[in-house]
Image (cartoon, rainbow, N blue to C red; front, side):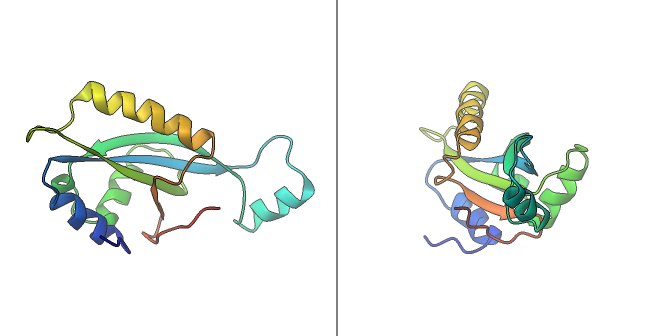
Length: 134
């Protein structure tokens, strides 16, 4: 299934054979301490910087109405973010993933983001637009 929007993502997750948990990792853009002048210019133009995870949460697809609700809920954390990385974790035999599986997956995913290994994520900006990171 081609996913072109957050609504498409929710639909895809809700129609899977096994229960899904959507894993959200909210990240903020930061300027590295040793940034070059070019990096500083790109950062100021909102075209660069390093993405650092600031908060994460898992939800079932049924717990989310739309992207605006997710953004509103994120405000309650007090964490400022620029990008949200999203992936899913599938259950087995009709049961959703358990808390240990979810937590272990988050540890692995956060490390992947820190290393720049982000190909397996859908990435959205604060307005709900899909972002292509290179």
